[in-house]
Structure formats: C-alpha cells, structure tokens
Image 1 (cartoon, rainbow, N blue to C red):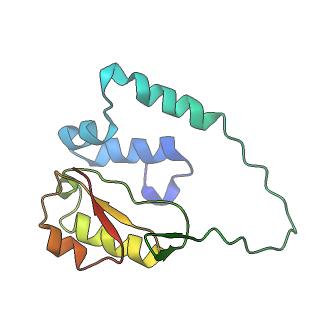
Image 2: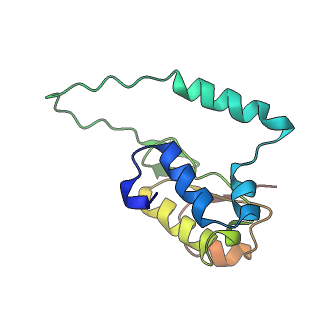
Length: 129
C-alpha cells in the first residue's frame, strides 16, 4: 500500500503498519483500557454522514476569537507526546502548520522540545500539563 494510493483511513493505517517500526505503530495506534474508548470513537465517527450539496456557492466563516486572538476555526492542534518518534521536526513543524492554518497548537508535556523552540513557530499556543 502506497500513500498515493490510499483512499481512506484504513488504507493509511495499513501503510503506516507496513512502514513504521512496531513500537512506533503500536504507540500511535494504541488506546488505553483494552481499546474500549478507541473502538467507541471509531463507532461514533462512523455514524457521522456528510451530505454534499452540489452547486451551492457559499464561503462559510468558521472563525472565532479566543483570548483576544482571531482563530480560523474553533479547533486546536491537540498534543501528542513523543512526536520525535515520527519525525525529527515534529513539534516545531506541527506548530508552524497550525499557525499557518490559523489554529492554536498545544504542546504535549512529553514533547521532547523546549517550550521556547516550539513557541517561536506559532501564534497562539498552549502547553498540556
């Protein structure tokens, strides 16, 4: 399975399993408490149905303000500890991407990067403690 031929999350999961060392894949894919919450999340998301409407021309404004700063949408890039397992520039790169998207970045306690190194790459950021 190549990344270019992936069409859904299951395909991406199979590509990750084939490419990543077992310890890294298991860390990413694993969930706590025998996987109960993970399975419930998958079930809940499978019940969400998108109903595309063709030929509807609109530009929705999902922006909001948080702590005096305008956000593109009411989302955060949530923390994931030990991202260096996945990429050497994980948190600084993720912080830059979230800033570019106009959403806050949340740095994990187990980040592996100093706060100031990541904060230099973002607009509004938080630290998970």
